[in-house]
Structures are given as C-alpha cells and as structure tokens.
Amino acid sequence: MILSCSNIDKTFVDNHVIKSASFHIEDNEKAAIVGINGAGKTTLLKIITGSLPADAGLVTFAKDKSFGYLAQHQAVDSENTIFDELLSVKQEVLELEASIRQMEQDMKHVSGEKLELLLQKYARLTHRFEDINGYAYKSEITGILKGLGFEEETFSKKVETLSGGQKTRVALGKLLLKKPDLIMLDEPTNHLDLNAIAWLETYLLNYKGAVMIVSHDRYFLDRIATKIIEIDNGVVSSFHGNYSAYAEQKEHLRTEQMNAYLNQQREIKHQEEVIDKLKQFNREKSIRRAESREKMLDKIERLEKPVEVRADMNLKLTPHKTSGNDVMQIEGLAKSFGSTHLFDNVSFEIKRGEHVAIIGDNGTGKTTLLKIINELLPPDKGYIKLGTNVEIGYYDQEQQVLHMDKTLFEEISDTYPYLTNTEIRNTLAAFLFTGEDVFKKISALSGGERGRVSLAKLMLSEANFLILDEPTNHLDITSKEILETALNAYEGTILYVSHDRYFINKTASRILELTHHKFINYIGNYDYYLEKKDILTPASDTSAKPSAKEPSEQKLEWKKQKENQANARKKENDLKKCEERIELLEQKSTALEEEMVKPENATNVEKLQKLVQDKEQVDAELEELYEKWVKLSENE
Image 1 (cartoon, rainbow, N blue to C red):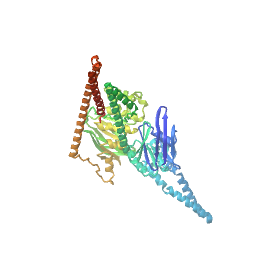
Image 2: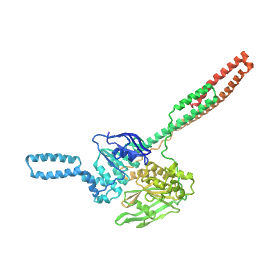
Image 3: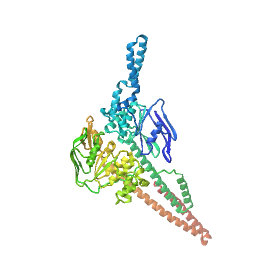
C-alpha cells in the first residue's frame, strides 16, 4: 500500500464537503476520483498533498515513497525554453554526466593508486548513470514532449511565451519525467488533443507507479482506471473496475436502494392500514393487536429516499421549422493564416437528422471551419450552401450571450416569452437546474453552469441545425450525460467539434477527421472510427444478437403470469368475504349483548345461558376471522 486515507473530514463554512472519508491506494494501482462539480475532488487531492489541511483524519504515505501533483491550472513561470524546462528535472543526470566527462579527462593525467581509485568511482557513477536512464534522457524528453503535442520546432520556444494550456502541458511533462511513486493528476486531458490523450493513456497504463486522476473524460477513465473513488454528497465510496463498471454498479446499487426504500414505504403504509382497520373493529383484542403493531412500526429504522442524481425528463426537442433533406453543402473550401496552412479543397455534405462530429489535432482548423460556416471568418476558396429552411444555432464556449444580472428563469423566459413556467422549469431541470436553482443569478454560476444555460437556450431556439464548439468543456460527468440525452432526442441536425471520445461515441452518427489538411469521412461513432482507422486491428463483429425465447419458455411464462393473476384475484376475494363475515358477526355479537342485558332475559336463566353460549361461539369465530384477515392482509 502506497497511500492510506483514514476518516478525512473537511467543511467550508456550512458546506460539509468530505465526511469521514477512508480509502487506500495500492502500489501500481490506477484510481480515478469522480463526482459532480463542487463535490470536493480537488479538495481531496489538496488534502492528500498537504496543501490544504483536513479538519480531521489522517493521510499516511508508505515509507520512502514519493508523489507528484499536477493541478488543473499549473503556473510555470520560466525563462527556459520548453526543452530546457523539462531538462531541469534531469539535474542528477546532468551532474553525473559532467562528473563522468571530467573523470575521463582526469584519467589521462594520473596513474597507480590514484588511477585505481578514480576507476572505481567512475564505475560507480556510470552504473548509477545507466540506472537513471542517463544515456537516453534527451530522447526521453523528446518523446514526452511530442507525446503531449509539442512539435520539435517549438522545443526552443520560451515557456513564458506559452498559453495557459501549453504551460500546463509542460508541467505535466516535467511530472512524468520525475517518475514519482504516486502521480496525482487533476483534469490532465483538458488541454490535450485526441492523439495526446491516447499517448497519455498508454503512458499511464504502462507506468510502474500508482496513479490518482480527477477527470470528467469517461473514455479516458475506462481505459486507465482499475478503481473508482466516488464523492457523493460528501460520502466517499470505492468501486473496483473502470468507469463503465462503476456506472453499472452505481446504477445497480441505486436501484437496490430505491427498491428497498419503496418496499419499506409500502410495508409502512400497509401496517398503518392494518392498524387503522384493527382499531375500527373496536374489540379489546383487536385494539391490543393494533397497539402492538404501532410499537413495532415505531422501532423500524426508516430508510432515506435515495437522492435522484439527475432528472430523466426524456426531453424531446423539436425544431419549430423542419429543414430540407440537404442541410449543408461545402465545396472546395480552403483556409490559411499567413504561412499556416489549415485545409484545402474540402468538400462534404450534411443531411437532415445527421449528428456529425469533427475531430482532429489541436490547431488543424476545426474551430476555424465552424466560424467560416457561421460567417465569422471568410474562406480563402470554395463556398458553403445551406439548404431550404435551414436555421443555424451556434454554440461557442467562449462567446456565450448571457445576461449576468438576470436569473436563470429570467434568462429563458425573457428570450422565449411564449413558454409556460412548467416548460421553462422542465427545460432547466433537463440541464440539471432544479428547485431554487432557477432563481440564481447568471453571475453566480460557474463556467460549466453558464455553458449549460447557453446550451438550454440554444436547444429551445428555432434553430434546426445546431453547430457546437466543444460543448462538453468544463461540464462534469452528470452534465455531459444530460447533454447527451438532450442531443440524442433532438430532431434537427447537429455538427460539432469535440475531443470527448465518450461523448462522440454516444452522440455521433458520423465522424469527419481533419488530418493532413483534408477531411476523412467515417460513417459511425468513435468506436467505429477507431476500428476503421487502425488497419492493424482486423474488423470483427463481436456483437451477439440475443436469441429469441423458445415457444415453450414463452408459454411457461404466460402460464405463470396467469396463475399469479388468478391467485391475486382469489386473495382479494377471500379478503373481501372475510371482512363481510367479520362485519356480520360483530353486528350479531353486539345484538346478543343487547339481548343479555334486557330485564326479561337477565332473570331467565335458561335463556341467558343460551345467549351467553351463542355469543361465545360468535366471539370465537370472530377471533379466528381476525387471524385470517391479518394473514390475508400481509400479502402472503
């Protein structure tokens, strides 16, 4: 075991972020921390690294074990070049290399015992130099930089001139070069393109140490993770397997919890009905039975209703106007910025109802293409033709038109005044804004939340052709699932740029890959793209169609269903007859009591004995019927 967290607790003012969390990380284990935005994932990492104190609990690292941490936004302020910045990690290698070179020079000028001692030291240093991969450190740095998306001609760029995302990639490269026993990464794929993400996956899969990752990239987590650590309402739970296995276990667990809650609620309601009925019988024994059942009911440990993580609204978004079958035609499109050549002679068509994903490396021109389609940039060559009745709705994460002083509800209602309050609330609920959330100011929302509001507005617009640039950026996993559901239900046409492979897999019916200045067309989702792109992997259809049930099996199921229905009808009929008989006998018992207290009968010993005997028989039968009624009511 490399790391143990025991009863970690953290509260910010009145927000109990982490509640008595306990888990551990084994050597070489690959663990992922998941949870909605604000759940406390980054807080947990900071507590583990010691940069934030816990209110309670203990973080313990195994003896002599090292760790490295990459924050989401890593500030690397350096006058070094990119290559030299990574080279700074190899200080021991550089010092050893300098010492070895110096000794090689010194050996030329000494002899005898001095030479013998120098040779011994030289052997020790060269052995150490070999152990720490000294002979290949330059190629190791080059491999990591290229893997993270840096071209060789950019290695000489000064770090201080880089963008925030590039600086984070430099910091990631330095961390990977250090090779700590435990690597902790907070959203490492945010600034990587698809090729760089795939490279990082392979690197981490083969990494000899342990890895802890916070990420919303579900495809990445499926490839990497062997354990999922979930933070849900402050409660930290561990699940074995990758993200898909966790999602399946979580859904199964949630279903079990919901079923247990509903079963208990049904049982409580049933017992309350039985108690009420027993009290209505108004007999001494039935009242005692009712009181006994009330005591038992009071002792039941009530289960809390499981929190619904999302509202499955099954939102169906239908454009107000249907476009023609031919939505867009692009012919001979070309674009360059100075000496930077993006693409040329690009031609393709999009038909109504298609969900088309554009993929490719960073800087190849994906976003530029979207801007050309939206007439925000002119093409150098070629033309774009839109079909009949095509109305474009454009989403750009960086250019959201929202009013900071409005509430969420006002933002939607002012833009679409014809919507009812219920329609507005349902739409916002589908994008995970429920209850009092709808009255929050836009200015109080996070970047991801504002993105969801913009998407909700766009989905409500009259557009029948949605063009989306990185719609899942800054969204947590639950928000991504909401968006996937909404887009899959959308009846218009969609063209989007994304590097989220899981999202592409769920929503794309076609992929356009921008590579080597050209677009390559794939009719399928991301898995299909990988299958066709990787020619070394033979295509194989592993999907197995479920076999139809045998007629005899269907017949047996039908017969069993009919038997169950017949049994239910019989039980209902028996219960009704029992209640009718109880009512009749209770009336008879009351009538006998009235007869017994009449003066003419009270003095007639023979008549009184007969009345007492009849009442005893009636009461005995009533007792049996009470027992029978209780058993029938228990749904046995």
